[in-house]
Amino acid sequence: MSAEKEGNSRGALVLALETSCDESAAALMRGRELLAAEVFSQVAIHGAYGGVVPEVASRNHLLALRPVLEAALASAGVRLQELDAVAATAGPGLATSLMLGFSIAKGIAVALRRPFIPVNHIEGHLLSPFLHETSGPRDAVGLVVSGGHTLLVRIHGTGRYRLMGKTLDDAAGEAFDKVGKLLGLPYPGGPNLAKLAEDGDPKRFAFPRSMLGSGDFNFSFSGLKTAVRYLLPKQDPVPVADVCASFQEAVVDVLVAKTLGALQAERVQTLAISGGVSCNVRLRERFALACQTAGLQLLVAPPALCTDNAAMIAYVAALKLENGAVSSLEAEIEPSLNFASWLKA
Ligand code: KG4
Ligand code: ZN
Image (tube, rainbow, N blue to C red; front, top):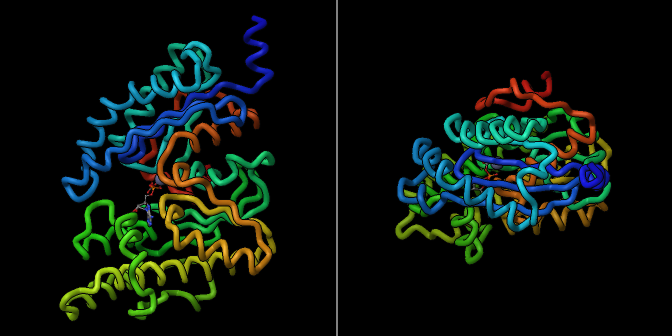
């Protein structure tokens, strides 16, 4: 009993599993302190198919989850029986992938008689830049740029968000991946394209900066992708590095301009960037410079917390528990969970 009390006074010990796509991840957090975060990436497996194959992803989650969970427990030096709560990603994501982490986490919660906390993957990304901030989520504009989403969100605090803008077609990461495919780069296109862009001329091709003057905070990246598609047959040989650098610059230009506009409109001083595309070195450089010039604070998580991971899921669960969340054993996976429907929930 005394050990239990001691545990509680240091904050709840939370296990989170994340399996929304092709990373099998487990993390442990005590209070807001991250104790361990393990990820098994299936990128090499899906690379052979040129993209994520849902059936293959779910089989590999099944194989990877137990070792990933055991590695997280060993690294944190805790036992399963010590957990105070169990969390998992509910959506959005691939149904057959979500199901694995969600069901296993729920099973552990039931077996241990602990609360089960479902977490929205996008909220995980959105709040990940605050994970190492002692103050936690606060007034900010959040830019989520992942493979499935490009969102501008006004953050008022944990659980209090307003959608300011989103992509009307392709997400930023999706555009990177599709252009990578057009160029014949290995999967995933984003990081491979970014690597090649390092040696390219970002001014060589004047690709479109869509919706810069749209007067709202929405994005569109499909025209940019089409511009690359039309350009390629006219080039022989294709100057791959220059195409990559020019494409990347066009994406980053739009993201920086729209996001700075959102910060100005909201008169907030903090920008929190998250999602896989926020690993992009050029994007980080450009936002760092823009924020420095405008006197804004930039929060961007280390790369391991930008791509899919369970630390961000554990963090949201920890914040929810602080705010009095109770167990939701009746919750089910929600593969199509989107920001708007979740706000209404
Ligand atoms: O957040 P994430 O791991 O998964 C989703 O929730 O979608 O994001 C994956 C996306 C992919 O589209 C990937 O190509 C992109 O992030 N990405 C990058 C970079 N690293 C990952 N895009 C551009 N530059 C990078 N360095
Ligand atoms: Zn993600």
